[in-house]
Image (tube, rainbow, N blue to C red; front, side, top):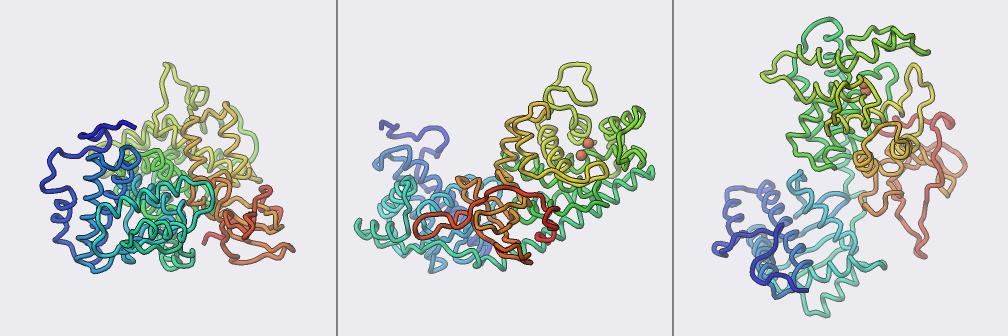
Length: 506
Ligand SMILES: [Fe+2]
Ligand SMILES: [Fe+2]
């Protein structure tokens, strides 16, 4: 391959001069931090330089200047951490990276580098790397090139294969460890779960408060709502699984409020996948939480009706998009009106081809926020039990419908992102396994290649005995002969088995 020799191509930008190096400058800026916060910052810096090195190694031959520079940055970042901390261990555990037992914070700016490093380590069967004193750029080159070539290999590679190859190459600067078992994270997961529950119940309470005060004709304060949206966004950026899992608690009596919160959670998680910034996610979350605020101006008898609506009642219901815009004009504590929320309230039932409501007089294109909220809204509404929908559809069937039925009017790209987010079998789906066990889908598999093999919670044994709280199983687990231990045969309706899926998420 003939890559440029002197200047790296776009995407791997680097200032021309090498003095002082990027690594040294970044490290100097870090010298004020201590303890955990130093490790978090310096660790992130290391991950970013590693990611940069992996990218240039893929693009250029080893003697290329861009490769040499990137490798010396990595070696420098690592050595400076070693000098200060006297040890340096990088560990991958589920979706997280730990450096010397400190979990690095994931945010949108480093999402790409984190997921890249995690997936390369996972593909090579490496759980941890201990970096020893004196690792040179050439050692890093051998190590990273081996990682990249192993992760391309199709067959099952293990830590030991890689360690052997390093030894053969005479590289002794790295100690590799196998992937860690899931139980290692119990504590962190438990804390994340508690935080998610707090955020969820707080969000429902505040939403209830706002919707009720609009119904009473008062002007609710937007500040409280903004804080709720912020905590939802922060939580999703930090640990997505717990909060998304809570959307399966379908409280029939509180439908209007839990629906708004669920749509907000789904929209923010989806917006993050689509690459929105944190500030955009705040805006999107606010719009999603308010998408049905116009329903607070629709008479309750119409909202709670279980049979077909009369023409007049339908007109009331179909007015909720523009009634929502009016309600948003009356929010207090706001210097600027929430225009994006108004647009979403107005457009969320319009559909992609404008065949929905309200009818648009002129041609228009639904905003991306409205498209996202429409998908989240359609999914949550169809999978919930409500006055006029006593048997909700299975989440998997709803997703398939949104993808395949053009009349639903969903944006195909947004739907695709949503399926990637929830998996082919969304969180909360009850599934039958080939072991005759029943299981509830707990989370999508962290391995993106295993979209149909989620993490599940086994909720009944092969004889039909209900287990509570049951235990988690990763459907990518294999027997020594390579056969999968468990595989999903089909989805089932929880009502048929008397199972309340939400119970398994609290
Ligand atoms: Fe709506
Ligand atoms: Fe809705």
